Image (tube, rainbow, N blue to C red; front, side, top):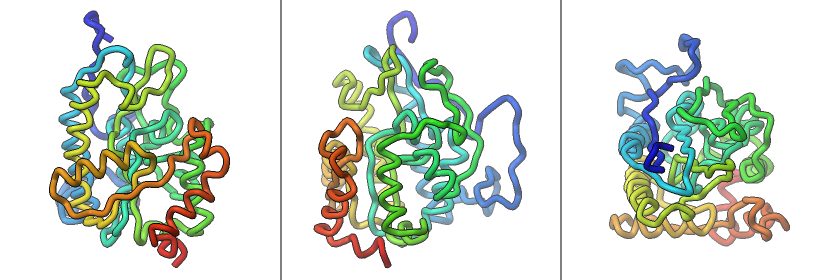
Length: 288
């Protein structure tokens, strides 16, 4: 935080990590090669989706935030390698439904670059790899360990654990579904407490979410999905508002957020989520 009490997201080059650089593995589909024929040449759904995220990053770097924000992490900068690996591996086109979260958690996407990215599921079930660097400024209680993080995130474990039980293999889930977060930034106060976008100063929140809403519309267009399922009320409401304002005919629904902050989720989130997906008529797509 500078002398005026504001925090600005500092620029970090995509792919920048530790001081020791690692050469891309030519046998790894998640290589960082950027030349013609790479997954960033605009020829695939994954490429177009990643371009939307990179453009959003450019706009987000121009924002500043005041109290209560003291730290800002953007895993789409320092954890770009595993994030890109996730998108290139599982964003294949033809997926009709998008699960939409709000923003990263400290032991989920903030560590792995994957939405709801609890480390064990990202590494062992989704088989995501990649070097993870560090944000420009880290809170001592929220250090980034990447895929070596030993702290489990409850929301991510519940989310991916539920779909592993239903689908068995990731390929079954990603045949019809993809997962994305509305906002890629994680905010923290002086103590390291996670701050969600609704907790930000109203003007700063609206400037942030206006950019994220625009990027969501672009991402939905790139993916070609026909339904967005907000994970939590805020994500659902923002998606409905953004897509309606853009005149996009996309069905928007919602399921309960698996956060341990939610007393109802702690009483049995999987049963509630399963019943809701059955009600929406999409549960059968997870077991085919």
